[in-house]
Image 1: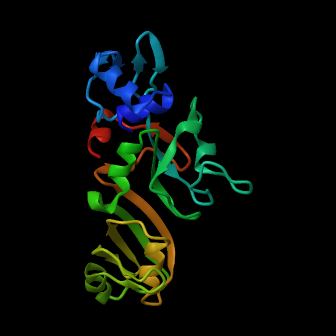
Image 2 (image 1 turned 30 degrees about the horizontal axis):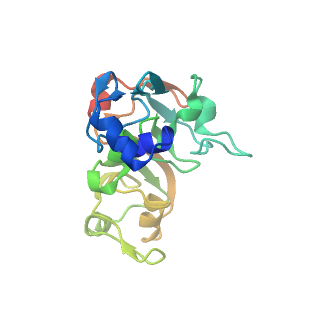
Image 3 (image 1 turned 135 degrees about the vertical axis):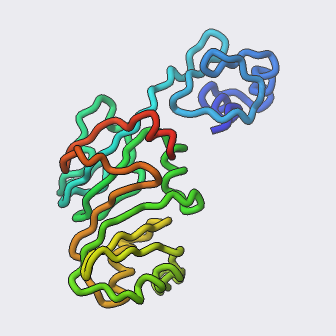
Length: 230
């Protein structure tokens, strides 16, 4: 949010008062006097007006979770266990999921309280590839490689999927790289060729790889290097 909008809402100031506050150097973000109204402020910034602390700021948090099967990609659910139920951290309610997985899909899931970071990861325009290991009921026809690279038409949404890269690893196993996240996209892409997906596992998001030492249901903080890769 822009600083001028934040001050107007949080301190209940008029636009004229906000301009005056900024010109007079009475607003500080992380201890620095800010006079520009379009300065972007986030949940993690400490914001002060005169001697009043408007926002203390929070620590940015980034977690890697090995999502198990039979777990809902949601922060709450009245029936099923959620991925947030697997997290034992203070203020875990502040976390949101950056890239959901289906109920029985396993693998890499990232959780954060940093909205800008997660948008960079999940927006198709960012070209952050999501890599999946796919097992199918029937043998995978090699014609899928070209079809996936060209894009498939989804009639329900009236759209064509973005080019995807398919690498055959065996008769019924492949590695698929997507740059978007449509509803049940992997299953629907293989379903276009009447081939049912029997297992789906996400290995990587962008340059962040699932830690091979993480057992299903376990998590750890991202390293500084991993955070910077998004």
